[in-house]
Image 1: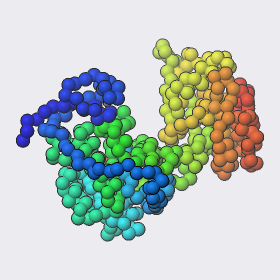
Image 2: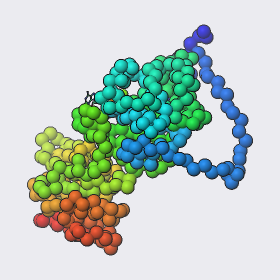
Image 3: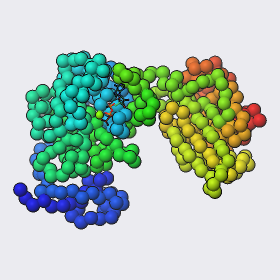
Image 4: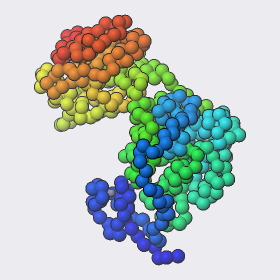
Length: 449
Ligand SMILES: Nc1ncnc2c1ncn2[C@@H]1O[C@H](COP(=O)(O)OP(=O)(O)OP(=O)(O)O)[C@@H](O)[C@H]1O
Ligand SMILES: [Mg+2]
Ligand SMILES: [Zn+2]
């Protein structure tokens, strides 16, 4: 064996150097270098391919295979694309193995051959989970090894339609003298599965662990290698689980999948609003309802605001589920334009049920929740509040107003405060529409003050 050499690898982009650097010259990030030990670099044999005219390339439609887990299929853009390479990332214990074993079960039931490779659990553990989930299918093959040569052997023997690797951080290539989970191991093994996927008629799912900071452990380039990155999220103290697409080469990234983690497995929740909204009948100070758009669906969520006197020095702003900077901006506009005083109050903003609302259309709902809590006055009954707030206090329009209002009507909402700009587009008649132009109007109407 050659003498081991230590090299430093950027955990963000995979850039290698023999000297430890503070800043990566390739990606510009600071303190991203990790020391690894090497005997030599692996040589790749690349196939030589001449360039081809785009017009000469024959178009093959990419067929999708349904896993028949609708929440999962929708997030992928309508099913799994053949020869696609998908990373499913999530925190420990969130249910990644459960999800993918369920996917394996469904695919096998539909006649596909699935190879489930686990480097994390014993055959008995996986069998026990399968029993609990009610998965009994001849088409699932289990390989509890993380060593790349035994994996290659397994792939050759089974020639599967689907490969599940649980997890990419445990896969180990003995020819690369760094520990499993290290940047080089993860990158090289991920590259191996990519090549395998693209040259064989199969699709591959990688399970990826995420770090405390919420990013996939290992090199950032893992996310570039795969076709799609899906995050499986949820507070493991609750049953709610959300699948969210972060990158998708074969579809949009807007869709989410909602599940509940039950004793006998993941239960799909097609009617997502029902779990995010506790009670429409009661109106509570500090709570507004906002219909947010997630892909093709509308989900009603509760925006909660809590405003309490500050006891120690600087007022705190604690935000979860909406953008922190947006909340600061909203508070600044409320102070400047409406003369509300928040500077001796702590402000907490939260989205009920742990969902993240990634749109500025919820600004007005956030503003009303905060003022509602500050004044201890509940918003008008059975109402939703929609609109983006401009710096001058004007209310900007939102997209998909009818899609939102339709879901509101279905769930028994009776009135909607909406941006004046959206009024002309409204075609939903079951709800009383209250158009507003400015923030002060919106606050007055929604809190009847
Ligand atoms: N006997 C059981 N009854 C009900 N729920 C269970 C049972 N065993 C496990 N679970 C649920 O399954 C979850 C673990 O799921 P799973 O092992 O699929 O997660 P994971 O993301 O693969 O975890 P890891 O990071 O450890 O691989 C637990 O948090 C728990 O909610
Ligand atoms: Mg697992
Ligand atoms: Zn870098």
